[in-house]
Length: 252
Image (cartoon, rainbow, N blue to C red; front, side):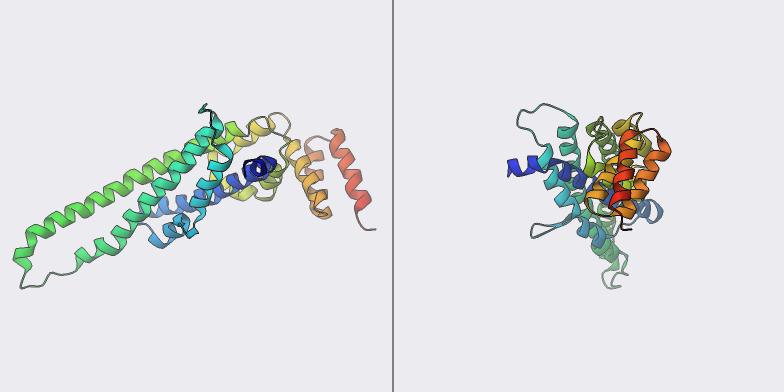
């Protein structure tokens, strides 16, 4: 298993970043909903988290992170810290899901009118139950705040983990194909992510993406990626060679 993971490390790394972006966007939508309405969607969170026999996106993300980032020498690095934050996001989301269930399916029942025959006797109990309901809302706020912070720290760690890896072809292809998704997930951290990977050679992302597209025989898309690389750096010999290769393989 370990050897197989190492042989396919770049693909797994790409998949972890993809899943993080999708999960981050979904969680952020829930945070916005909570701040606007004070509620969360339990079904949405349940789908994100999943269960042992039907793992959700966050559960699978945690497992993938354990496979590729978990080290045995206990040395801290961007990878081992990503394993920590992504695992923490899963478990914090699990708690959030449970609180959302309590809020949605238990909290609303306290708004039912009491039976007149018991109204006076039940009043002291209802006061305490409402206090517990309020505490659940406070727990949700704390969990949302922690998750927002964990997502922010994870974005910073991804920047550090992928720093100086401009030849990472699966990563480049993902960034090229899913620019909108990454921008939505990373927001203000999107420019630092690209800068950490490609430094002063932003054309390298398009070159690696073009190589991947060429390998997949997607010639029109490869030509567009090469054109973007040449737009940024017309003198790049690799881009020029790729342009000739795409042209020669295109149907006449």
